[in-house]
Length: 173
Image 1 (spheres, rainbow, N blue to C red):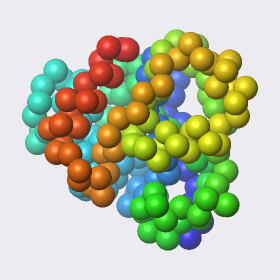
Image 2: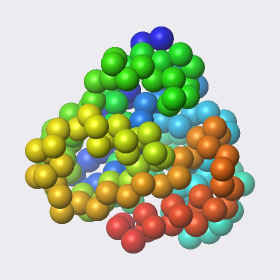
Image 3: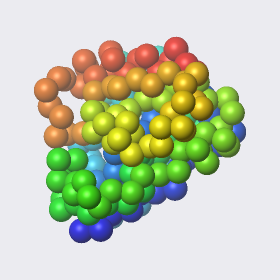
Image 4: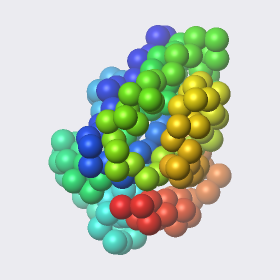
């Protein structure tokens, strides 16, 4: 199945960029970042931005969540602009079909950016492989940090452990 990522959720005030690899089927169908009901992204972000550890908090509507992220200087996007993939697993992405997103364009419009966080290994691997080397050199002042995937497919560590690791985002806000 041909998959295409969403436009970036970013503005000039962004200090942190969180990158996934490519939206999964649930996200593509809903046209929302991290829409799968068992993806831990939104509960993690809510807990981080509200200085808590309550991963079971009732979340506001999607548009309110996006506004919260932007108001706190957090941008979202995906490394891949398009690819072919059956299902939602990153391991199912057909490597020879990958087209990366335009990071030189995004970075040029986010002058306050301090850090780029990868939501899982595939996002970091794809960034390292498909983003132009000159873009990486030009923005070498940014911190690039891989975090454990929030995907329900990544169950090697608990959501509480993920929250502990994801707390590093606060250092850059």
